[in-house]
Amino acid sequence: MSEAGEFHTRPDVAIVVFGENPYAEGAGDVPTLEYSPGDKRDLALLRRLRAAQVPVVAVLLSGRPLWVNAELNAADSFVAAWLPGPEGEGVADVLFRAPDGSVRYDFRGKLPFSWPRACRPWIPASRRCFLTATDSPTRTRASFSRCPDPPRPRPPLPRRDRSSIPSRG
Image (cartoon, rainbow, N blue to C red; front, side, top):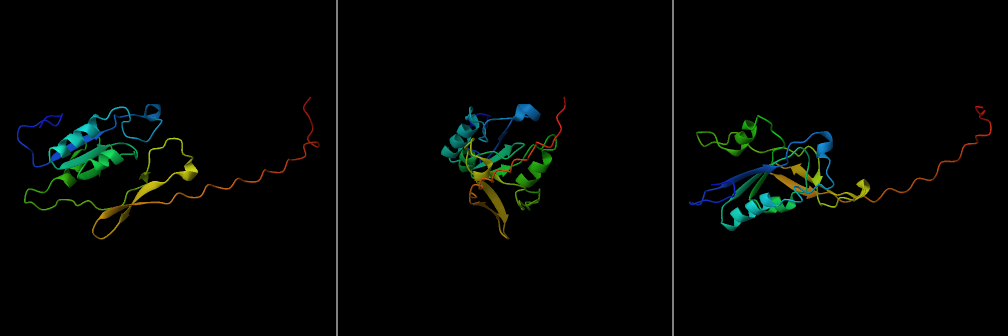
């Protein structure tokens, strides 16, 4: 299969690895949590493969939680692999079976923190809702937290009498 998803013989499965370009500090500051807002080639590839009846395993490489609802819905299976650096073997260990056909490492656990439920960049922090994962004996499931009520404004502090403070002169 080519990088563009073209094939002569239909594959059994497509493992599509995509993600953010490496960044540090200011270069990673973005106005939205949406994955790749101006470039939807990755999403188009996922959808093209699904339309061709090819099962899709999407592997997202990112350094932060991102809003990936469209990509998540375009894949049969979705893995948030973070930025594995030169040690991509760890990701391969959970994607592929051992030579004898047994499962080498199963996916288990809990997301370390919340992922965005929606992609609305100007929501005050007090009103953001997040997707969280919970552990169960059989699978990891997603759930949404309820938006908290906005905080009540604090009463103003009393003004201090400054008449007894000597002036510098």
